Length: 303
Image (cartoon, rainbow, N blue to C red):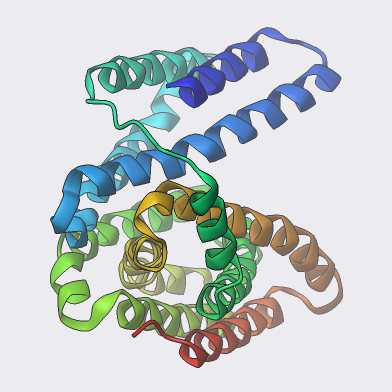
């Protein structure tokens, strides 16, 4: 509730200021609170699922549905009400989330010296370290893909409609994979399903790197479900499996922090490579990075 309140106040502040130098610290505050809120939300969901944690995908699917709805109506809202209306709508929706959180039963944490020792053991656990390294490599490729895919489509002759259609189509394919992720995780385990997502990410990125025209992005985007849909559910589940019982929320925070680090690095590195080698080469390089991440993921596995 505290982090969500910080998110709401930061967004209200951004909507009110008119000087760019004030936007920077407010955007930093928004990022700080939002990146703390999301792993806590995942941890709460996993806690209430209890022994049915493999069903996380059926819970997370509602986030994908919300994304599809918002991307479907956002253009109309911008045309009719202007950009500033997004801040008001966001604030109202987050206030509703805050009301829902008030009614959720509280779980009181107990942090003691042994918990800090447990955190140290988790951080230096070879399996966690290799898992984190693989996430960084995949995150580099994934963040670069999201940053430059729209530019790549435009370079190949596509337009904004094609970009939006590809995003919506990809989001729709998440739904069945998240809905039925539990049987996959129960049958093969979170480690193997995560490796499956890594493999299809490599295939998807390679296909982007060789597509001859912009319209190829539509069939390739159908792989979004088996890449992001499986990847996110499996990564959350695997981080939860690796963490001791009293550090489940912390593990989710470390997962998000690792992905954010990869996103920062991915934006800078991808921009430099794009300037020198072009986007087709860049996407093929992303595919290679993902294969290396897959190999790393196989180095250690939790028994």
